[in-house]
Amino acid sequence: MSPGLFAGIVAGAIIIAVLAIVAVVMLTSYSRDERRVRQRLTPTAVVPDEFDPQNERPLLTAMVRSGKTLESMVDEHGESARLLLQAGWRSSSARMMWYAFQTVLPLLLAGVVLAYWLFGPDKNKVMYTAFVGFGCAAFSFLIPRWMLRSAANGRRERIKNEVLLFIHMLALLFDAGLSTRQAFASLVRDSRGVLPELGKEFELLLRQLEAGSDTAETLKSLADLMEVPDLTSVLGVLRQVDRYGGEIRQPLMEVLSVIEERRTLDAREKVNLISGRMTVVMVLFFFPSLLIFVAGPAFSAIIRALGDINAK
Image (cartoon, rainbow, N blue to C red):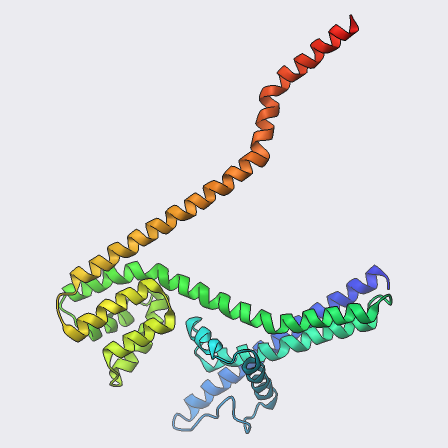
């Protein structure tokens, strides 16, 4: 097979993959817009569930159910549900898109294997096709997990960066005489632009509190879900104050100092690692150049002098 034909096959496979992803996005967006329009036209009507077999979108429903089946095969402990919450993908449309992606990806990789079998080189085709198939099968299960963990870790890092400002705002609100529930209500109402990620979590927390949930248990659930150590420390202080009472500003300032000290130590550790890496770079690249620049003229003079002695 000529290189040009193989490049055309690869380009066609990439185009098909892009079209499939665009189709999934359009189906998800269409279903979301349709559901919103139906809710506006008939507010009291019951909107059908996306996962209902009687749904009007059988293709999207089948893709979602297939994605959930594949996820249950590789996730026996419910890690995906926790990672979806940590990534902030709580809406039905986001979950549908995620499950549909888990269905489309193996199909695309299966198409790559089929294309290699039909148009690949004839020499050792069975062995190479088996290797390609094994790699595609492994990536079809690993790539969604990597993407989900990366999204969850990125959002947790953004939440970690908002904790310091969150502590300062809490201290101001408590100094103004607000209770814990009133402080969270103020954060949700006035600080969504300042605390974008934490604001979303606090909005859900406030809904649970207004529904009658226990404040300490709700704060503990949020801390266990997010798994951000700095946020866990702050919410632990709020739980203790809510349960036993007492002054709140001093414990918050102590937690703030501990977090700042911890981050200072982390920054020093990163600087030490960067210094070690830069030392390796200097030894490999800068030191040889410096040695040539400094010792080169002397070495050339010595060689020239020895050449003159031998000539005599």
